[in-house]
Image (cartoon, rainbow, N blue to C red; front, side, top):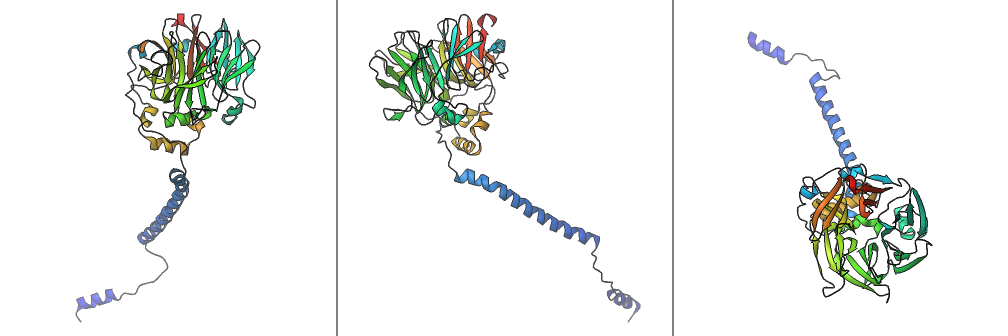
Length: 416
């Protein structure tokens, strides 16, 4: 064996000390691999635990709404008559925290009347509020209590000085504003031509008091579920006529998408009807040779119209409780082509949560024949007035009702 071979032999057979310790690099690699696997398993288990209920909600639970796909035109640019401004911020808040949800307003002389979210018909005099009557029975306050408590929405003054009231649940009433005496003209919830009066909304009455017209927003959903109705956007609404002489009830127009506010035209042969989810106003012929016909009065509004009331210049005030900003993003326009998202939203969130996504942008406008906008008043962030549902003009001022807010707004037209 030469010297080189001997060295190689000694290296191969060099004695080694065996211990429990591993080299530093091997310890790190083994520990990291084990911890990583534990972390991955834990993360996947936790993710599965959290996602399983969501999977059940999304796949197994049935959505309460069955939306239809419908198309809307691109919202008009907010310029010209629709140019944003801050004019509504000049308004006052009247009766703040004394009245909740005064949806509609009417006046006899300088006395204002409204219906409230707790089911009352109230008289607003000076700075005081007086209860005229209550249509339903307490308790009131929650969504589920509305059915018995009532929710007066539309209010008009009849030819003999009485008030004509549309209650979402209870029906159409005539109320003596002095004595509080109440007569029900039309019972809510009844079937007419095979469909229920589930959600009565607004009312109009002829000058002689012989005809009363009212909108029924849905035969499927009640007012407390109005978000369901908005999301479904089904053509389930109608306009009905009640003859106060013969006491006959008849359907004038059907297949409307969320018919809301209603206003008689001066000739009393047609009414304007706000078709809320379509962002348009329809003209429905209720008398004369064209009775039963309909055309569009104004299409593609920059907001979703609520009540319609006459203006002193011969036009009509329209309140829009939510807008379709352009430039900007309109959630309802976006969802109109995506019913699956609507279903998912109603599986995941309650009405209270969904309501928080409703914009506070306030917009009212004056429209004339042909749907021409002549002026509009805005409060882009709803700082002073929010959720405006009606504009009632009286003695040089606009009284602004709200289906949600705890006040009546007042805007002096001389200030704008």
